Length: 125
Image (cartoon, rainbow, N blue to C red; front, side, top):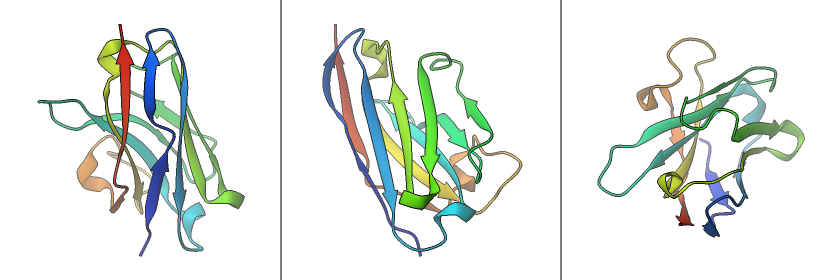
Protein backbone atom coordinates (compact mmCIF):
# COMPACT_ATOMS: atom_id res chain seq x y z
CA UNK A 1 0.00 0.00 0.00
CA UNK A 2 1.25 3.46 -0.93
CA UNK A 3 -0.18 6.68 0.43
CA UNK A 4 0.40 9.87 -1.50
CA UNK A 5 0.07 13.40 -0.13
CA UNK A 6 0.25 16.43 -2.42
CA UNK A 7 1.15 19.95 -1.36
CA UNK A 8 2.10 23.28 -2.88
CA UNK A 9 -1.10 24.30 -4.58
CA UNK A 10 -2.52 27.78 -4.29
CA UNK A 11 -3.56 30.95 -6.06
CA UNK A 12 -1.18 32.56 -8.53
CA UNK A 13 -1.43 35.19 -11.24
CA UNK A 14 -1.07 34.30 -14.89
CA UNK A 15 2.60 34.07 -15.82
CA UNK A 16 3.56 32.98 -12.33
CA UNK A 17 5.02 29.74 -11.02
CA UNK A 18 4.19 27.06 -8.48
CA UNK A 19 5.91 23.87 -7.42
CA UNK A 20 3.79 20.94 -6.38
CA UNK A 21 5.18 18.16 -4.23
CA UNK A 22 3.88 14.66 -3.64
CA UNK A 23 5.34 12.59 -0.83
CA UNK A 24 4.78 8.87 -0.63
CA UNK A 25 4.73 6.55 2.34
CA UNK A 26 6.45 3.20 2.24
CA UNK A 27 9.83 1.93 1.19
CA UNK A 28 9.02 1.06 -2.42
CA UNK A 29 8.57 4.53 -3.89
CA UNK A 30 11.52 4.06 -6.22
CA UNK A 31 9.82 1.12 -7.90
CA UNK A 32 6.80 3.14 -9.10
CA UNK A 33 6.28 5.21 -12.18
CA UNK A 34 4.93 8.52 -10.92
CA UNK A 35 2.47 10.74 -12.71
CA UNK A 36 0.59 13.99 -12.35
CA UNK A 37 -2.98 14.43 -13.55
CA UNK A 38 -5.41 17.32 -13.25
CA UNK A 39 -9.15 17.89 -13.30
CA UNK A 40 -10.65 21.25 -14.14
CA UNK A 41 -14.23 22.11 -13.14
CA UNK A 42 -16.71 20.36 -15.39
CA UNK A 43 -14.02 18.40 -17.19
CA UNK A 44 -12.60 14.91 -17.00
CA UNK A 45 -9.31 14.23 -15.28
CA UNK A 46 -6.42 14.44 -17.74
CA UNK A 47 -2.79 13.42 -17.94
CA UNK A 48 -0.19 16.10 -17.26
CA UNK A 49 3.20 14.43 -16.87
CA UNK A 50 4.93 11.24 -15.81
CA UNK A 51 8.42 10.14 -14.83
CA UNK A 52 10.15 6.78 -14.90
CA UNK A 53 11.31 4.96 -11.79
CA UNK A 54 14.88 6.23 -12.16
CA UNK A 55 13.86 9.73 -13.15
CA UNK A 56 15.67 9.40 -16.43
CA UNK A 57 12.61 9.55 -18.61
CA UNK A 58 9.72 11.97 -18.70
CA UNK A 59 6.59 12.54 -20.76
CA UNK A 60 4.32 15.58 -20.93
CA UNK A 61 0.95 16.51 -22.30
CA UNK A 62 1.28 18.92 -25.21
CA UNK A 63 -0.59 21.59 -23.26
CA UNK A 64 2.15 21.82 -20.60
CA UNK A 65 5.27 20.88 -22.54
CA UNK A 66 8.09 23.42 -22.11
CA UNK A 67 6.26 25.04 -19.17
CA UNK A 68 6.07 22.21 -16.62
CA UNK A 69 8.86 19.96 -15.35
CA UNK A 70 8.39 16.72 -13.46
CA UNK A 71 11.19 15.39 -11.27
CA UNK A 72 11.65 12.97 -8.42
CA UNK A 73 13.90 12.42 -5.42
CA UNK A 74 13.78 8.75 -4.52
CA UNK A 75 15.75 9.35 -1.32
CA UNK A 76 12.95 11.64 -0.14
CA UNK A 77 10.08 9.57 -1.58
CA UNK A 78 8.91 12.70 -3.35
CA UNK A 79 7.88 13.69 -6.86
CA UNK A 80 7.66 17.31 -7.94
CA UNK A 81 5.87 19.29 -10.61
CA UNK A 82 7.44 22.66 -11.35
CA UNK A 83 4.89 24.79 -13.16
CA UNK A 84 6.05 27.96 -14.92
CA UNK A 85 4.29 30.48 -17.16
CA UNK A 86 0.97 29.45 -15.68
CA UNK A 87 -2.22 30.22 -17.59
CA UNK A 88 -5.81 30.49 -16.38
CA UNK A 89 -6.56 27.27 -18.23
CA UNK A 90 -4.13 25.47 -15.90
CA UNK A 91 -6.64 25.98 -13.08
CA UNK A 92 -7.55 22.54 -11.75
CA UNK A 93 -7.17 20.09 -8.92
CA UNK A 94 -3.82 18.38 -9.42
CA UNK A 95 -3.36 14.74 -8.42
CA UNK A 96 -0.23 12.66 -8.17
CA UNK A 97 -0.43 8.96 -8.85
CA UNK A 98 1.79 5.89 -8.65
CA UNK A 99 1.86 3.02 -11.11
CA UNK A 100 3.49 -0.41 -10.82
CA UNK A 101 3.55 -0.43 -14.62
CA UNK A 102 6.91 0.74 -15.95
CA UNK A 103 6.24 0.70 -19.67
CA UNK A 104 3.23 1.10 -21.88
CA UNK A 105 0.17 3.28 -21.74
CA UNK A 106 1.15 5.45 -18.82
CA UNK A 107 -0.91 8.42 -19.92
CA UNK A 108 -3.99 6.41 -18.97
CA UNK A 109 -5.17 6.97 -15.42
CA UNK A 110 -6.55 3.42 -15.27
CA UNK A 111 -2.95 2.17 -15.26
CA UNK A 112 -2.18 3.94 -11.98
CA UNK A 113 -2.65 2.06 -8.74
CA UNK A 114 -2.52 4.76 -6.06
CA UNK A 115 -3.73 8.34 -5.96
CA UNK A 116 -3.32 11.35 -3.74
CA UNK A 117 -6.19 13.49 -2.51
CA UNK A 118 -5.39 16.37 -4.84
CA UNK A 119 -4.27 19.96 -4.43
CA UNK A 120 -6.03 22.99 -5.89
CA UNK A 121 -4.20 25.26 -8.31
CA UNK A 122 -5.95 28.47 -9.31
CA UNK A 123 -4.48 30.83 -11.89
CA UNK A 124 -6.05 34.27 -12.13
CA UNK A 125 -6.02 36.29 -15.32
